[in-house]
Length: 45
Image (cartoon, rainbow, N blue to C red; front, side, top):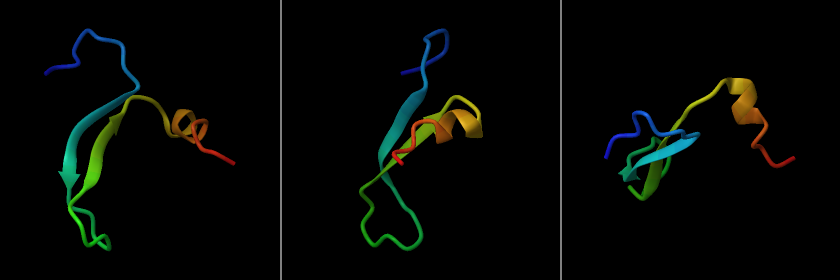
């Protein structure tokens, strides 16, 4: 599925990504459409 011409902020492209330091391959792979400042605004403080 393409997200072209669809407004989006987060797009999950996989639920099986490998990340160094995490032993299981059950990490979500996501894209974020925005700036680092935009992403920081989602952070729980």
